[in-house]
Length: 84
Image (cartoon, one colour):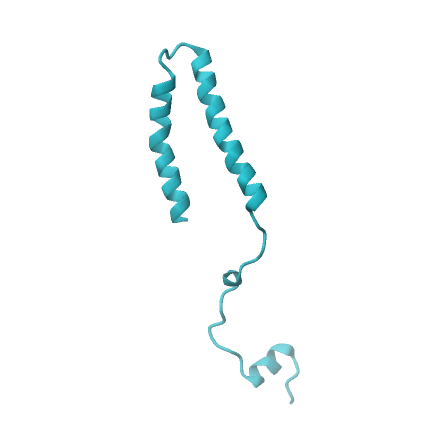
């Protein structure tokens, strides 16, 4: 989470600088089109890397650890096998 948040913050600083560098005339649609294509390319590369290298394996830390282990009697009660 920290790496992703840091990258997002860096991009939020770079994006206005890039727009200021590319767009000299704010009324020119071709300059804005170039800004759009640059941002689309960045998203495309990021998503392609995710599709190639992303995994869907369940991690070991997904399941919470039990607060305490059950005794034999507690297990029997839970399973409905207790003796009368």
